[in-house]
Amino acid sequence: MIIELFGPAGSGKTTFAHALQRHLQAQGYVAKVVLSYEPGVHRSPLDPSGFRYALHRIAISTIRTAAFACHPIDNAEGFRLTGKLIRILAPRNPIWLIRFSQYLMALSHVWHQPYDAGQIVIFDQGFIQLVSSLAVFSGVSDVEKLKSALELIPSSHLAIATSAAEPLLSQRLSARLLRQTYMERLFEADCRTNLQSIPIIDRVKSILLGSGKFVLSIDTSDEGGLQESVARVAREIGAMGSDGQCKAAEA
Image (cartoon, rainbow, N blue to C red; front, top):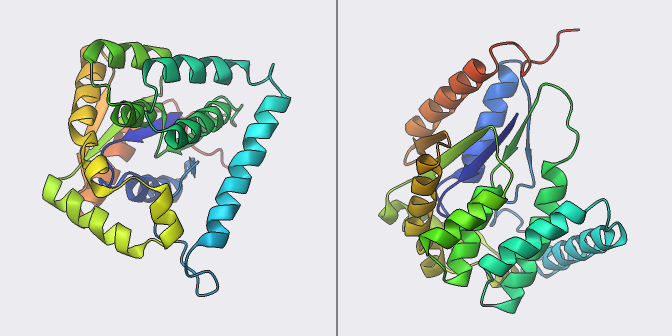
């Protein structure tokens, strides 16, 4: 089972994904969060500016891209999807164009891996989120183009839309900025750009619902609401996997 989250920056996607993973594991499920990155948690007194960690991220991305290029047949689907999405929603900044292209390839590769039977895989930055982010950085909010992009991406078993009030999002993003190193801030979008994703996310959600896609909406404004939403999603997963396929087999 593949679960993906989407929502504005600061709406708690990563926090929720890891909370859901812990909750599911406690219930006996085999669950893991993949391709997750949380800004502002990589500070080190040995690397106060974050320069070494930034080099590490660049090196990993470069090696990963080279690996994809060396196996064009195995990654043909990822190349095709990346090309089609970029043609529809091309970021205006060349740096972000490269970053999104690299992440698209990595996401496509990980998404289509042959996971173990019964495993629940959680993406806090899946294809729906990627389409939404591409729309923000390309400046494209046209419904037809968003529909075309969403029709291209593979479908998850469960999509979860996270949300929080805009003042709270602004507060969280400002707090995140203070936690980040200098180099991390160079690699992340600013607060204004992140907040521009709110109407895009709402539009994407409306398109998905209009196409018949089942989307769970959760509010992460406070800890109590987050835990309640985790339990709610877990119940939904239990109903979807009522035949026992998502539960870990007992020894």
